[in-house]
Image 1 (cartoon, rainbow, N blue to C red):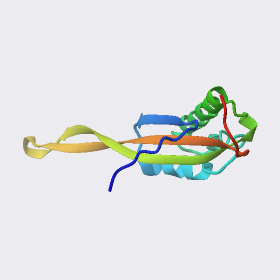
Image 2 (tube, rainbow, N blue to C red; image 1 turned 135 degrees about the horizontal axis):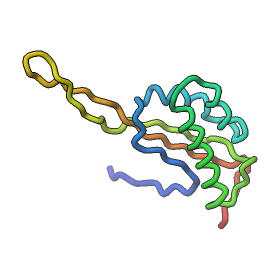
Image 3 (tube, rainbow, N blue to C red; image 1 turned 180 degrees about the vertical axis):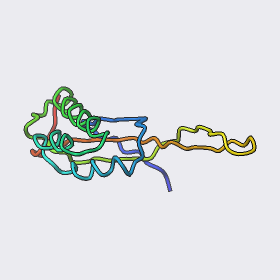
Image 4 (cartoon, helix red, strand yellow; image 1 turned 120 degrees about the vertical axis):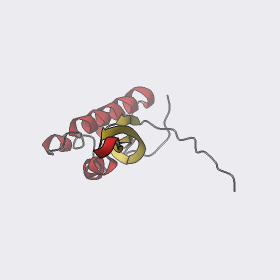
Length: 125
């Protein structure tokens, strides 16, 4: 079976090498998925997590990309797709008893946010 890559056309915002575990960011992203653009950047401001500011900046970036590159109106956008993926680990070592080194793995993740317009039709540049 051949592995076919889809060539997707659409605006997106990509946050890479975020030094937080994926489960902690999924708490925020699950609340945002499917929201309108007017509501989505405001929701993380009232959550008590440290990555909320980063997620709201990614939402603003995705809307700006949709407006600039595809001419979509920001008021018509909603968050159609929001993914959080695990990435590599940042590896560190702690000293332990009898001169041994104990590995510590600090998780890194990647966030993809794709806005879509309420109006389904042909997108022209």
